[in-house]
Image (cartoon, rainbow, N blue to C red; front, side):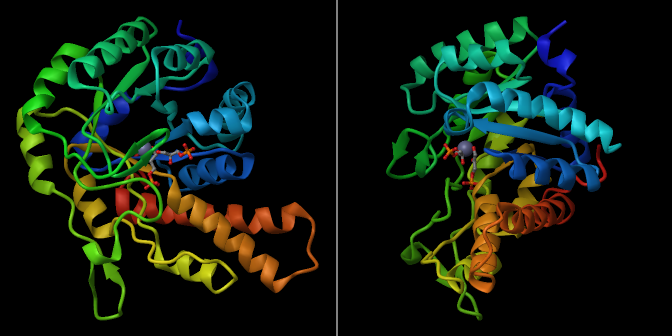
Length: 330
Ligand code: G3H
Ligand code: 13P
Ligand code: ZN
């Protein structure tokens, strides 16, 4: 039996099948520390949502890869003890090589992303196929990527978005054997997804970014009918948390994300997985800044990490219920 199954994880196969049929998306939340992981499990447990726990290369080096894998295992046990009956995937985010993907599979991950999007097309196919062969031998699912998101993809810096070419997707999926495909339709990583000059202003003076390229998504859906699509860079950069950061000593200027309405639309399509990291970072930072400003004598980390964890849990429940539609689907 695959190691991840003995640890209590599932791969993405069934999850994506149900998400496709039910017209919702599975949340993929990144974690780097205990409080983020607790908030994800509590938020998804309380809202009865399936969840993908996402670990980046940066998270592996920050938190220590051995500890992280045991934290993932601990999350499964915590969910069980709390009576949450939710499927949990442990997923490598933006795997940069066969070796990293193999190391994660060998240590108990149930899903990996191999991000070959910065390679020329044929090289992307070669590295992705190699990962798929190894992963499928262990019943682990694989996410590939075609097209490059604007912003920073881990070590890969892309000056501007190169949208996924619909003409390539059928060939890529057939030749690599991937289980899902991340595409580029205008999302990007981080809290500064669009320059102010790319945006318009609404009545309240809030910057409104250009819409995602749903026309490209539709074209892709026609070429690979019923195939699970993944959206990276899908934080909404919620203004209430940006404001909280700025009114408590922070300096985040012109932070713009993907409007929730567009994510709701995407979740009803073949998009089965939506990646969210920056929104969690903003919530945690906002709450810590608030406590520091209001209680400058506080020095017990539980007194500021605790409120941050609570607010992150609330944000996750809200997203699962009102944006991705995954609440109640576990
Ligand atoms: O897509 C990137 C994720 O937000 C992870 O970011 O590499 O800073 O951990 P990180
Ligand atoms: P955000 O930076 O928009 O949260 O995207 C996260 C992501 O794509 C992780 O792979
Ligand atoms: Zn990403």
